Image (cartoon, rainbow over all chains, first blue to last red; front, top):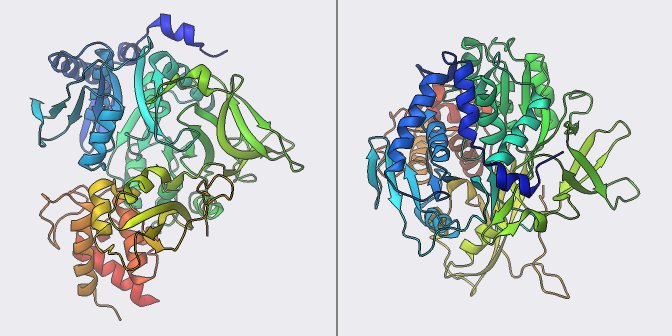
Length: 478
Length: 84
């Protein structure tokens, strides 16, 4: 039903082949619209080939891991495919990352190079739009015989930062599975607003696989988003609750009649946003459950109004079970299906080892209702979700704990009515009155801006378990 | 009554420090979206305003006109803060 590690090892397909198939089928169809520029499928493939030739001159070996620190845009997409065409592994590096974090990612992920859109210290130009920072590795990164396309960070199940390893075949499998639920085709136009460094596979790769058109514009506010949707007759919106909240509060008369599918992803959909959006546009937001280790697991297309807080039923080919349910049917949510990630990188953990009896343990607590709708109740992990970006407490604590005035820290999410959660931190000082004046500046130097706590609370001690002394993790507080 | 000029000074300092890179020469008239202000920048800015002035500015109030530049954004924020 889904790929086994053996089929992954020996089939050796490449995701660029899927895009090239689309270009053969729809050469003149628009793949991307960006501001006033249109690029057809045939032109996109040409651009990818040109980039691929340039990247070849780097003379990196097959399977070399390359960081991509680009903002959203056609170049981001073209470079991803150009790297794949050369059989390199793409490691997205969010553009918000400060140099120190980029350096950590490069070391942990054993990157051979990082691509930037502009000249920075220690970069060399490859083309006027590509600048490369190269790293000398003592030994090439070990890909364990896998045909890896992509490594992306996540919290994993233990909350530490991990790289999720995905082979070309795995991504193909999850894209095909996800589209059984989305039913996106060449007749669709997707209005795009999410950061590609965080969202790419069951979105951009899926859209390009089926010949859809993707509109990229600066949708910072509701007005240009609505204008783009109507100008280009957008049929699909795929965004975080924050974006839908922006749209729902728009007070112009603009409607979005062309939209047939509006999917809310990245974090729980607040009832207020679901209701306001429906009232404003007469359309339902479909809550979805997407997990980087698995792809799209569930989509609530059947009853988004009545059961707005359910992620729906598992999509075809996926199975979800509730482990050790309590008297209310609530237990740990385990999943299996096509496109389960191939491994965790750094330290390497194979797919067999990260599954429990063939099931992926999500870390979510949930239950099914009598009609088979899945409800997620809370996460067992302490990952914080700020307007659709995942923040890992341990990563921030590691930075705070290195501050000369801080003895230890605990980072947690505080529920925010408009953003899901915001990041806050409790800190224990080394000595009473120790200076933390420069703490904000210190954080800015070491952390991407969205990870910096909005509030610091000075406390005497942190809560720890009596027996092991382990830090007691806070779940989101109000 | 909070003056728009006071908010403009606060926002300029915040945007220069937390949103834009040091090589962006941000003035009160710089086009924010053109300079790279995105939806995460908006999230951080609204959070900063909430923390500094004690009120969440509804996202729907932030129109394209409000993001024309820092001066326009400050005027919008001042109007909403002074309404309460």
